Length: 130
Image 1 (cartoon, rainbow, N blue to C red):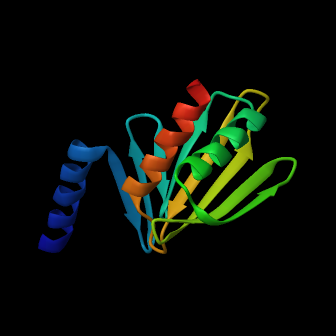
Image 2 (image 1 turned 135 degrees about the horizontal axis):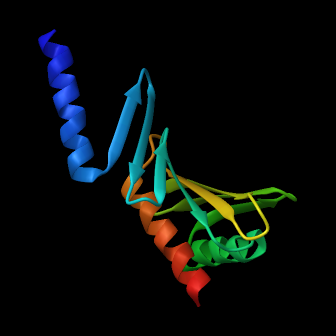
């Protein structure tokens, strides 16, 4: 019982400090600042831009960061970029939602780096605002 109380208190403290996080078995989900969802090692956000613009911004972000082993794969409703950045494998997934909304999911490394993924999201957003 004491362990359950400690777990609840820990989750409440985590929520108060960083946003919301839920752990269920081996699945982790988090919600940060009303914009990002962290799910199983990937940081996901919805951009209010058409898919073509977001795809171009993601490709430019990867180029600006001087990624190596870049493998872009574009389909009608979904596109991915696999690359290596700073010796970490990176996967960026761009998914069509509506004519003006596009989801971008970024996973950095095997376990997923929230900070690294946020950095790439910031680069994509900066390219969209240019």
